[in-house]
Length: 253
Image (cartoon, rainbow, N blue to C red; front, side, top):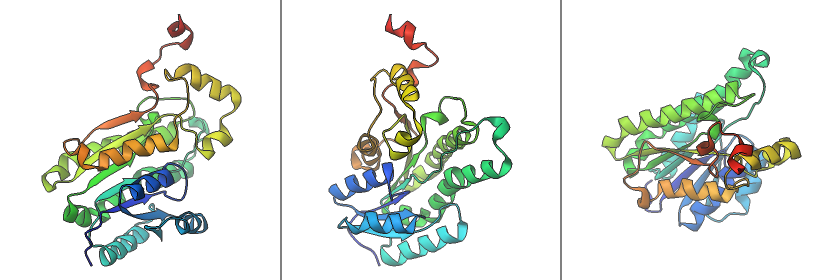
């Protein structure tokens, strides 16, 4: 079955940036296939959204991704926008990162992007669609306790450029968004007042971003307004990357 309604696939859609992106796609007239491995949370999020379609899938599992692609082929026959947002966060030092932890982070954050993009490639070709991969500012600049997470996100950035170089001849664009600190439930839970104050000092806009602000960049990159943009990394970070290793106390002077 092929539909004329544009189809967006958002992984990690049950909460956070993925859910905010789903809302914005729906506002733009897309039908959104919400993909997540957390079935109860996914069903709850999708139930309240007209035009949203939940599809349970763990993107780190090749068999589940293949099944997802079969369902999408049968139901829609095209994918206009793929947002590879599913990810796991793990913050610990190098010495405390055993191989099982390393592989768990890589399996979702990197393997999931590769597997999903590859499986949906025929559907993206059919629509001359767009891929947006969600990395992190931690993929652009090293930080403490980010040995697995930051490395996985740096790899996503390079994978995006590989996709852009190879898929452009099929009319498929591939870009990457690297969010800085964002007010998600996870950040609110793990960022102490001291950590939040330090981030505020280091971010030129002096605040965390919102999930909606990140979603705006994602949906823009999937739109015709970005029709000549591919292979790019956009840091939606309030200027955090631009400060480099500069000391906030010196900048303030």
